[in-house]
Amino acid sequence: MNRLLPPYLLNGPALVLFVTMMAVPLVLTFMLSFNSFDFYGGIKAEYGWHNYYEVISDSYFHEIFARTYGIAIAVTLLCALIGAPEAYILYHMSSTWRSLCLLAILGPLLISVIVRTLGWALLIGNKGVINEALISIGLIETPIKMMFTQTGIVVALVHVLVPFMVLSVWTTLQKLDPLVERAALSLGASHFTVLRRVVLPQVMPGVLAGSLIVFALTASAFATPAILGGRRLKVVATTAYDEYLNTLNWPLGAAIAVVLLVANVIVITAYNRYVERKYAAVFD
Image 1 (cartoon, helix red, strand yellow):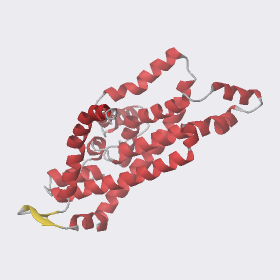
Image 2 (cartoon, helix red, strand yellow):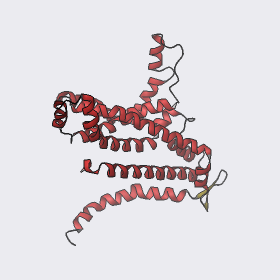
Image 3 (cartoon, helix red, strand yellow):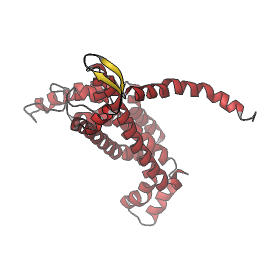
Image 4 (cartoon, helix red, strand yellow):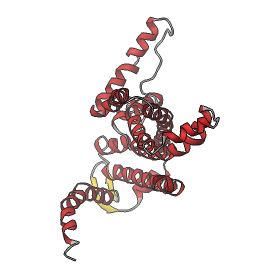
């Protein structure tokens, strides 16, 4: 018993910090979601499931949740299509070029998401760099609408989150034996066959793990959709923010946040179990 006590004592401060900074706000938010709200009287001490019923039954919230998860799926697919080949190319580079390219890929993580999003706003605005350049060379006559569109949000989120996919695939590639590829080539397999039959099955766990990270971060993203989507093109996170600070309907905002959390937990848990069952041997 005395031997088990020191580890618990060492973990105690971190556990207290976790409970205080994360668990307590979540519990308070969950409790707040059951309160009633009146635009004249504010939050009332009347409890019920009416906020959740409104979120689940109103087609307005259905559209917002569908848009949120549609963007999350699109960003996840694009990050996989870009990040996996990028990590594979880095894997075959020399150490010097690999270090430089990794610095270029991971460097943006040192910059605030808001700063990067504002940079994209300067690029894709109606009078942004991209539209001005296309107009100046005569390819278009009027600006292409990219700001306040789902396309603009997806492009910016891919730029923000693709490093996580690269890191995830890169970790899996460290377990890949290059001799296996050479053996397949020496036996007459083409490079495409080696990629499809040898490399891809071993890289897929990293792709799936990276997809999980990207999907979770995209579904709960706030800053990028808020800046590039504006007030009309809302996602779940910006909708909850508006309920809190604009309409001051904190119980409804709390209910939206709880529904988003529960939906994300269900999707992530189911996806994680699928990955663990299908690729348990590779991860071991």
